[in-house]
Image 1 (tube, rainbow, N blue to C red):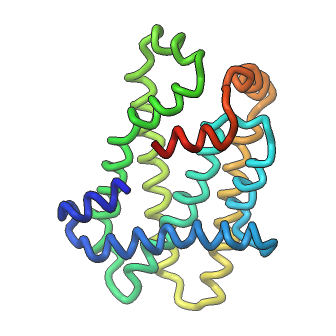
Image 2 (image 1 turned 120 degrees about the vertical axis):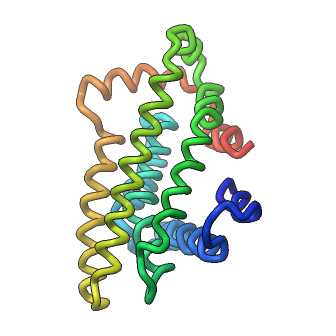
Length: 213
């Protein structure tokens, strides 16, 4: 929604292209979700994220990270290369980077929504960790963006359909393996998260409504 609003404002160098990217990018998620819910195969990284929704253990932040990992680390680069097909891939890079600026601007809003679900957030607030959290979030998104851009470059340079499918399959496996580190971290962190999870109140539906407000 934030990207769509920026398109209306003429924020990007090529707003028509970015509108197309927005649609292609979202469609990759929607296709994976439709395949998953109809019993068909989907990307391994999305399979991991969707399967985790059936488990009580993950916190909301873990679910979000698993979904962001699949959508950014696999889908975004492929979507960018698809939109720039037949043109110079580098022509879209500046607008591609502007998406990251928009995401960084949403960090505080998302944090507020997540903290509303978690009473222990008051303790973190007293520790004044906001600056550190924002820097980590911004740094993480820059890393994810740069990795996604490399996927766009790699995918754009592949000439045959078979080779592109092979590349996507191999990339998907790597992204899924990385996503699993969010959902199944080291034992000490699993124990800590399990304790935090006890205090994360509300149903899944209720949490989604809070995030959608």
